[in-house]
Length: 103
Image (cartoon, rainbow, N blue to C red; front, side, top):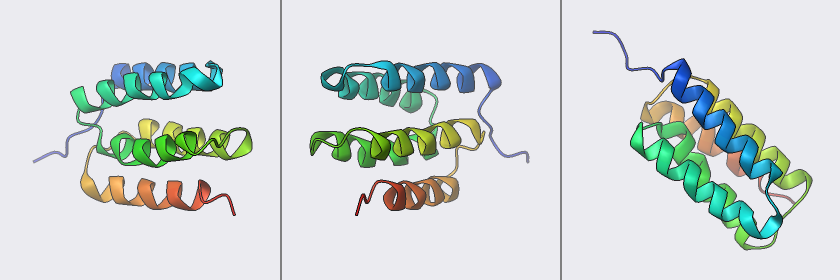
């Protein structure tokens, strides 16, 4: 049985939403992130869904600049990997945790 993959069309939609987050005003970034969450949930893209809460928490505590850019980079990688499984979600969540630690 072939493993489930994310279509290139869905990957493009996710990438466009991630780009919208990066272009949004700081106060609108979390709104854009919620739009990405809905799209990822609709298509069951677990790696993206695993990273979103970590980036959302960083935005909620007022993080901006390079830290957020790094988080968006992890989101792009998660959206582009094509996988939807929990193992990939765990890997991307761990990467995001490191990138968004900010220390």
